[in-house]
Amino acid sequence: MNRDRGHPARRVHPSEHPTRPIQRRPAPPQAERGWHAAPTQPIPAVVPEPGMDQAAEQAAEQTQVIRPVSPGRKSSLLRSSGSMAIATLISRITGFLWKLMLGWTIGVGVVNSSFTVANNLPNSIFEFLIGGVLTSVIVPVLVRAGKSDADGGEAYVQRLLSISVVVLGIGTVLSVIGASWLVALYASGEDKGNPELATAFAYFLLPQIFFYGISALISAILQSKEIFSPPAWAPVVNNLVVIATIAVLWLQPGELVIDPARWPASQTMLLGIGVTLGVVAQALIQIPALRRTGIRFRWRWGWDRRLTEFGGLALWMIAYVGISQLGLMAMSKAGTSSGTWAMYNTVWMLLQLPYGVIGFSVMTAILPRMSSAAADGDHQRVIDDLSLGNRLSTVTLLPISAVMCALGTPMVLALLGFGESAGDVDEIGLGLALSAFGVLPYAITMMQMRVFYAMKDARTPTLIMVIMTAFKIPLSLWSTSLETPVQVLAALTIINSASFVVGWLVGEVWLRHRIGPLGSRRFLVTLGKTLVASVVGGALGWLAAVGIDAIVPGPAGPGTGWLQSVLGSVIALAAIFGLMWVLRVAELQPAIGRLTGLLRRR
Image 1 (tube, helix red, strand yellow):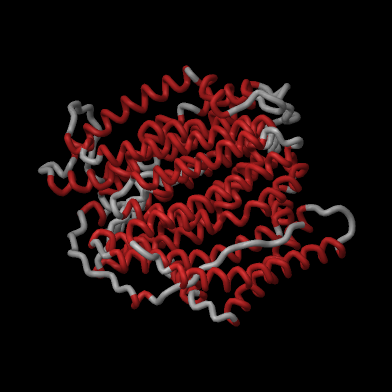
Image 2 (cartoon, rainbow, N blue to C red):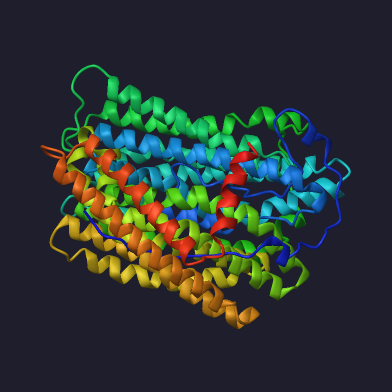
């Protein structure tokens, strides 16, 4: 069992920061056909993928392109945001499910760590090759080309696709050829590492690079045409294919071999090909929607000046991705050398859930206004909206962080107390409890990054990532000197969460220098009140879990874990939100209204 810690937030009524009207633009005819489409802002050119590694996901999260929306399009924004929120929620849930299933099937030891290293490679290389540029550059350029070109931007799209297919194809082939060298960058052969198995997986998984690129390109084109559902739901299709693959692996006749020394090539092939087919499906499922736009692929060569229009931004994005990968390499080597890399990624996956679900809706509500203010050069409105977003994040995410800290082990027992993963529940639960404090700093760091990007500044986020990576690398290397795997796991999870605290503080200093005081007093009041409530509520939840453990006879199993998690969470959250109401946390009602309103729209 574990105790609690956390952080808070609060909020301002929207009427305090009215959004200035922006000239309406007619919706393109494509938005009225086929898939659900709404004339709103494009959210990213690259949606965080279900198998995306931590560094790549942060790059995608932090570079979303969001345009201000006029009041006349408010209902469409709500419908589109609601659709994407539901798609994101289902994508997170199904992605979470297949990772749980993989843990139940092959455990979270060396085999899973080897697979995780190999499965992270395609995302890392894709982000470095073209992913960061797609996210930060392509959607605005495509929108402009569609409006200014006589052919609606078709020739430009064909030129972009031709160049990208060649770059992705060459990058994929070279990556497969150099699979063993790539694995060596992320995996250690010391102690419990198994680079040979990771390399075997990599040969089947690295072709994902090409299809991730095609999927992202089609997503960008569709979003430039204001068609959002196919890109939002495509990762769900990916997850369903992977779930089916793991089910086949689980149900195949005969005994499933999970010993890394005897792991058969047939199982490597089944898992590797099946997971890659998920990415193929993610790309193919979007093609019918692309064809409905009237765009047809044909080879078209020659350079277009618009491809270099945002060259400086693209270079900073490439640097951002490259630097973040250095930190990931150091952590991955430490995790694979101790056999805990899959456990670390399980902890990270659990920490991502509250941000991926709740943080998404908060960002959806705040970012269009903040982007509009940044476009107008109105720094006070930017500050007000940033403060509002941080306070909303605090009152929604900090209580969940406290519950995770208090009930880390019961939660992991409930989810992973089956099959081959049952033996590692205590280690993963400890890692979750120790690192839960990082949920809120992660959300605030993401919000700060978006402020810089809204002001067309890609340099500062990259420099912040340099500082965060400089914090991670030496501590990750130090963790390899620890005596036991559980100590390494605990160290890595704490280092990762602490790096977001560093990013938050550095971002705060840089934003103050850039746009002035950030209204921190109001935020700190909300933070303090919510923190007090979260500590008390988390402690009560922990006591409830201890009481259930004492009452239920025999060794604890998944049933006990579910009982502890559900009852402990209900008690903890009821106490937390009750105390927040007593302490008059002003953002409590607006935050709940944001979330329930988002669900009511569906």
